[in-house]
Amino acid sequence: MAGRISAFFGAQDMTVGNPASNLIRFSVPLLIGNLAQQLYSTVDSIVVGQYVGDGALAAIGASGPILNLLLVLFMGVSVGASIMVSQYFGAKDKERLSDSVGTAITATVVSSAFIMIVGPLITGWAMSLLQTPEDIYEMACEYLVILFAGIIGSAFYNILSGILRGLGDSVMPLLFLVIACAMNIVLDIWFVASFHMGVAGAAWATIISQAVSGTLCLIRLLLMRDVLHVRMRSLWPRKELLFQLIRLGLPSGLTQAIFSMAMIVVQSLTNSFGTTIIAVSTVVMRVDGFAMMPNFTFGTAMTTFTGQNIGAKQLDRVVKGTKSGMKIGIVVSVILVAMILLFGRYLVEMFTSTPQVIELSVHMMQILAVGYVAMGVTQILSGVMRGAGDTMTPMWISMITTIVIRVPIAYGLAALMQSPDALFLSMLTSWVMGAVLTVLAFRRGRWKKKSIISA
Image (cartoon, rainbow, N blue to C red; front, side, top):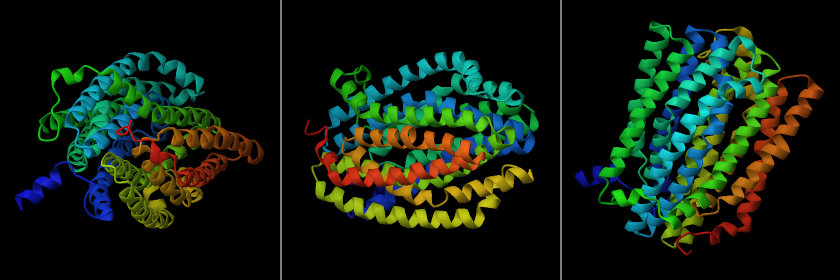
């Protein structure tokens, strides 16, 4: 019994056993963790929307694209580190595994310092560039500046939890996140409802709780000496490992940057429809964040599974695991779509009591619903390609679907229809086309030759 408990809370070797069982065992705590992480921004929106009003809710939503744009550094480091860790873990190369983790920690500190300095300096200019309505401008800027000032906690959690997942440990990041999420809920209500701090209170609650989760992840990694040993010399980046981290992580970082830039352009279009539509978009994107979690979860699980098995030179297990992952992902996506169509209104009513915002939000969610099945296919196959070391192909597909498809369609439909429906019809179209392109790229098979172990 003790051995089973230890294995459950330790690193999971996904190079042995049934692939479907590996994926489910890894994905369940990861999914719960992703849902809990989504609660950070969602609780902010619920508390602010209920206790301050739709204007404050819109302010949080309007700040999202700018925040995401500056978080791409962490996205790149996290993805690159997770791929390196999973492949070196699969290859049983403890020295390079330890040095890879040390390099990622140093990169986290440097990138955090950069954003903590640059973020507050560009906030006002960026929100003006987005044509943020005057009635929410000050609140949006205040919320962003506080989040940027405390970004290091979020950085450490996202990157170090990615490393832990690369080792097959999806349970401890979940535990740390649940602790932090509970803190966030308590602090949100305390700061916003009791102290009447408005959006600033929501921001402070977020950065404090994220700092706790990041610290716990760091302690966990440093104590995993049976798997890796991060020493002071490990923190000094080795040239070849830093190059690998950049090579693997940069495409994913660029993908997120491109997506964030597209979101900024679309946010500007959203802002042109007024504060009510901004509030609607904020609500829909919060629900969308939860709806996307299973897709992102299975994509991450496939990255870890593929990385470990590519490191162990077991391509046949990767193929078998991909089939299992697709079956699981599609079934979950179909169930998810049904739940959105049946219970979407109840979800929206958690954020606002304004009838117009509720009706429009439910309508927009109905437009997006079927697209989650397409996104499930995209995330799973992209996860396999990334785990194998091919991070360029998903990047190019993302560039095509956002720059060539989504943005032009959003503006074109908006001009033709004169309706905010264009915002979400363009998103649905880009999701479906992304799935088609990803399937075609996966079947070409270039990802099978991208392992860093063989290099």
